[in-house]
Image 1 (cartoon, rainbow, N blue to C red):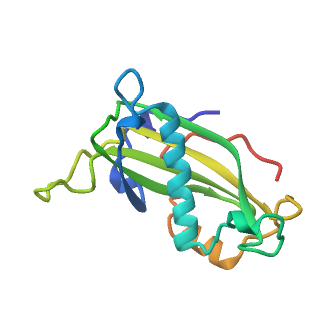
Image 2: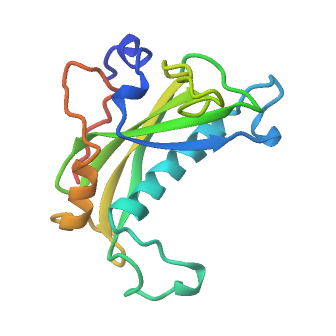
Length: 183
């Protein structure tokens, strides 16, 4: 099921296409003084959904939209699998740069990979921060109809084009394979 973890542990910023910086908070640390595992999953979800909103036309519904079937995008992405592999700790107060890429794109599903890097893309003197990923994680979305929750037959052009912009297809690179969905 899993490809070589040594390949994903060697990921660099150059392997990713979209970036976001996160300023860690004191509350992100656990009792061992490093960022808690749950925060990584929170950040994976945040960068993916930010990208979908900014670049793919996926407008999330709001709490005032509850019960309305025609609000926002008619498609929603449901997470069907997720993972995170940890190689070195991150800790408050350091900033974290998240790198996003798509590693697999189907007719109704997409698999994302996120690299976690220490520091912002450049430090205060303009020098590039550490280039090797401290962790690599991701998940697979299956896009379904908002009302019926059945997989879509085809993604919208705007969604597919946005996802293709960060697609990295290289079978030899090694990523954590998701179980194949029948959706």
